Length: 351
Image (tube, rainbow, N blue to C red; front, side, top):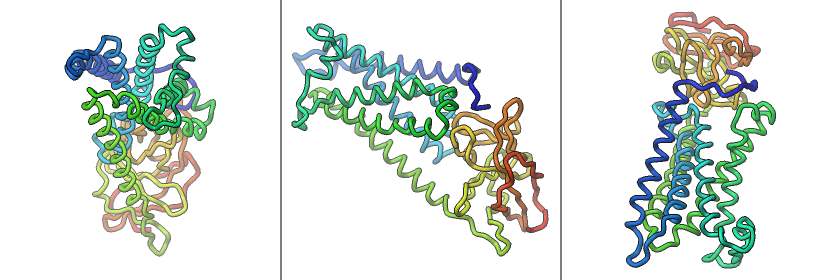
């Protein structure tokens, strides 16, 4: 794949991903609409517009929680890696659901206002000095704005136009959006006396997101310890048997980029760990069709020369490897991007 602009290329995996996502959204909303009235206090039935509004709002919150859980889950267990593919579709869908929630709010609560609904939304509650009555609407507006920006810039055209560092910095605002959504829910919907189940689910979602990120960060910190060097400066990667066929491991290099060492066809190759697309962790990916495939968005590179397969032009630095007594050693000095390095097999001489 390439960072060059091109139309969306639909394939079977994308269609299946989106179909499952759409079915899950529809199922959640329908179940919520059917079940929610049973939690209303006696004599205070929920009206249909309010039920629909909260169904889409709750769905958007849970979708955003799931999106933020995918990254750490994939780092903790490789079986979650397929969820990373097309994750941007998940984000765009969450934005659409959130917009649907907002449209129900405007049409029901502010549709009959004598002023513009958007003006009424921001001016109806101005109790900023009172924590109990703080205008939670402002958090919802902030979160929805961030989600719309992320959805609008999700295509690779914007990645190339804005440059990867700027694009990545913008898309890190998803964490600010999530904090705003959590505040919006805590100060708003959860105040209702019949929203005990929502409070439990929302609290559990926030705790789960935070716990998974802390767990993955702790695991990553341990893995980022620089590898031990031998007298010649080569780094000990570990036993060849520790790398599964078609998979890789990440080697931390002191003061430099980490390196991904892969096993393919019984041979070993090493390339830079950062994908040229969005700096995705290639070492957490796998070999597909003979190429190292980034777990974030599927960009591919040949392990022996770090080049993307034609017609794409991205290329990464490669590294020399050697094996002695079943142990893999890495030369931490990178070769120029795209340099071919002959893959090694067990039994070669030590460096």
